[in-house]
Length: 295
Image (cartoon, rainbow, N blue to C red; front, side, top):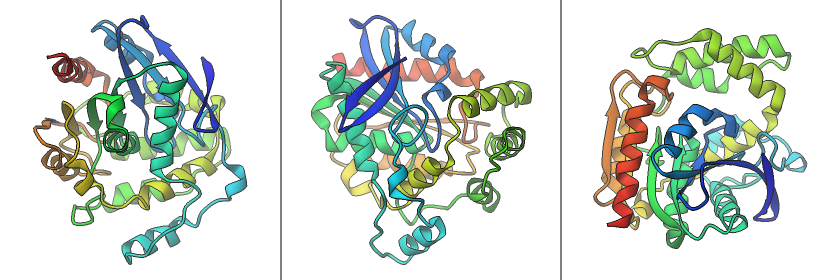
């Protein structure tokens, strides 16, 4: 793993595959480190001809933290957004999109396939309309448009998202398992022991809940991206779980409706998760979409 100077901060990243292959930038979601893009998933992309770049977003993992910005009152942010008020946050999703492009600059990658999951899907969308000359194709997984008319998360999922996490390691792992189980979806086996191992690895690599709160504030304050998504002209793939309780499937459908000629792949039984059983199907769909950029 390496560090890059990008957009006036330091970004931790690593890569898989040959630099001469098709570059694909993977952008992870809220509070999640780049290791949430599992090595096996990245290797499946490499096997389909990609040069894979994954990284820690700002304020998470081993990238630059924004400690001096303080911790936003997230309920105040949510209420202000619901009231239609302008909300000041420590940084914006546009800043995070600029981080991603700054990383490409640092790696001398002129254009890349952009793939984001959850909050990373929102960031990938912003990259596509804010930096169109840098994007070969777009894949938005478990994302939405920010359209305020869309269905909200289920109460159980929203409660799980907003519940303050314990700081003690074992208690944190237990609470994280409960949260993950709620949003995972019922169509695929939930491997609790593997999740315990993964969550422990993330905790040991970097436990930093303050960053989660600042990222959540940026996400909630971002507003409705749907009008801007109409300008996206690159090949676009929207992937969503039919059973997603955190970002309901209507969010994926709205994204596909917003972007001209976007392809929509809805996976039955998938929640707000990327079960290993879905990886071959997802990698195949990403590859097919990416290949359209060369036709």
